[in-house]
Amino acid sequence: MTMRPPATVGMKLAEVDTPALILDLDAFEANLQRMARSVAGTPVRLRPHAKSHKCAEIAKRQMALGAVGVCCQKVSEAEAMVEAGIPNVLVSNQVAGRQKLDRLAALAKQAEWIGVCADDAGNVDAIDEAAGRAGVILPVLVEIDVGAGRCGVQPGEPAVALAKHIAAKPNLSFAGVQAYQGRAQHLRTLEERRAAIDTAIALTRKTVTALEAAGLDCPIIGGAGTGTHALEAASGIYNELQVGSYVFMDADYGRNLKADGKPVDEFRHSLFIYATIMSHPAPERAYVDAGLKAFSVDSGLPLVFDIEATLERASDEHGNLALAKPANRSLVGEKLRLIPGHCDPTVNLYDWIVCVRGGIVEDVWQVTARGALL
Ligand code: PLP
Ligand code: MN
Image 1 (cartoon, protein in one colour):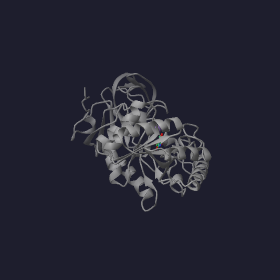
Image 2 (cartoon, helix red, strand yellow):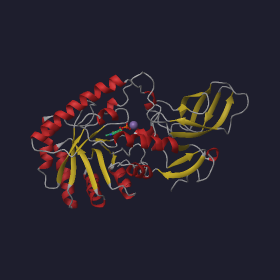
Image 3 (cartoon, rainbow, N blue to C red):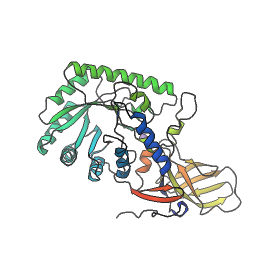
Image 4 (spheres, protein in one colour):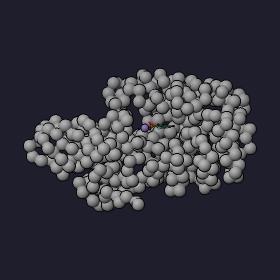
């Protein structure tokens, strides 16, 4: 069953049903333009990460502002994007298992370009076999661990050995290096982020130099997130930025600091959870209709945006508000916006994004790849 949208075009914000995901279009468009401008006229390309928004309407707007394609983290997410008309997708992740690899190879027939990452020779063999069954040539990037300690082979010679293995396969082409430093994104001070990305840049440069010495060209040298994008962009080695969260921002990113020690302000909060106060049993305590099923809490609880209050706890369907100013009149029925703690897993909880400008619903976009876990 397709869930009914919580709003229709032309409605006032206050009429939108809750819990709903609200997008402030002015802030969102400013974020898109700012990131596009940051690489305009440079050799660095944008390949924004669609795992943040999972929304084809947003991917289309990123492409219209110059992105070469998008990243997806899952094959089914990539399928949703391609079906919606996005022609160029890098699965910036490992894909294991025959069913998924066959789907990936089939997608390569439908799209203009589909790439994937690998960090294992046996997995490369399986990708090659799937591409062979489908009759396509799949571009494969070698993922290297540039300090995050997640996936990836070690930089330098181990990466060269895997790249040679890829290049020797009949149904694969070697497409470059995946060098994403995820742990650096939320290091709070600029000095910490810079130190981590300096290391990532050095390891990536060493790897690309060794690959070139072995006669292996790197069309894509990709990485970077919202927290460090300017550092990779200025590196002279990365040529694609996979920024995701910048379109929305979230409370956790809002805790990152600039060089002057003040909170980052390059991108604006554009994404909100709209919630209704459904119970106000004591002057200082109220409960909204948004809880653990309406926002993720892995990076902390949402921040209250519209009134002076703190969201102190959440249970399945309740958010517990501590009101800064105890209210003697009942607030039941009042609506307010929350800033999500972490945008990506929060968006995945919703079927619709309600786009608002000047207090009026201007559009309602489907979260195209919601729940795309395969
Ligand atoms: N690239 C990869 C491989 C990622 O896993 C992520 C997010 O975790 C990103 C890019 C985007 O990062 P952000 O949302 O911090 O911009
Ligand atoms: Mn995230």
